[in-house]
Image (cartoon, rainbow, N blue to C red):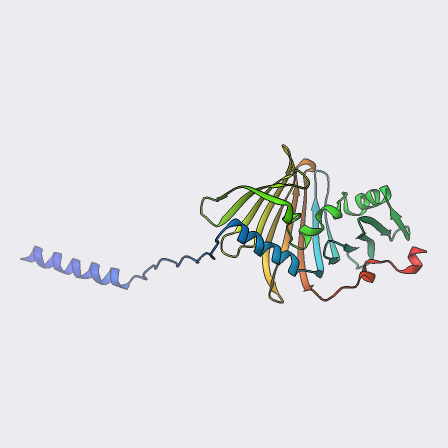
Amino acid sequence: MLTFLRLYVTGCLLIFFISCQSKVLPLPTKAKPTLNSISSLFSKLEARNLAIRDVKAFLRTRISGENFNQSFRQTFLVKGKEAMRVDTYNFFRQVLGVLIYKGKKTLMYDARKNQIVTGEEVRENMRRILGTYIDFGGYISLFSGEIPHLSYLQTKASNWNSDQTVLHIEMFNQKTGEQVDLGVDAHTLLPKSLILAQGTHEVYRVYWDDYKKIDELDFAHKVTIEIKSKKQLIVVTYSEVVVNQGIPLEAFELASGLMN
């Protein structure tokens, strides 16, 4: 009888102890948006590309490579695929250089020499100021979160990653012959990554992160470009982003006094 009472008391204590513990409830799984087809996804991406007409922002840019690691404060203007302007400042907010890409031509204002340079001199000055040469004409779409040559991309295959959070789409660029691997977020259908390759040579890979709403548009506030062949990494963080304010083309011109 005594043994029975001990067991009974012990059982009641266990039940009381367990009932007092915080119950762990399974977290609800975030529902994925409906994806009827790859073509419907491309329509969404194309609409997003067209929705971002111009961008104005402040940048914190870090450029690192095999023998250098530099950070800059910059202002950034971009108008579609037509024009881009990047003003680079030193720690004391003094202008180091102004780079303008417009009409498929690049020119640069060298503050140290107080002169405009074009052609090969742009490469030399960019290497001196930034530590490397960046072909902004080739990256202009990436900085505003767009997929380059989207209308020319033909789907070859698609598959989900292991936890089904990212859809990877393998594509072929019918215009350039390049291979493209695009990663799209399963929940937001926004671009997360892109790998561009020519044959077996990887040209670059880009990652878009920290999406925030700007006037109902989702804009990536962090863009990372990795160029493995040059062992270079470009990390751009955006702040005070303004979109679709009708930036005039005159903003992509240097003062007439400088041009003369």
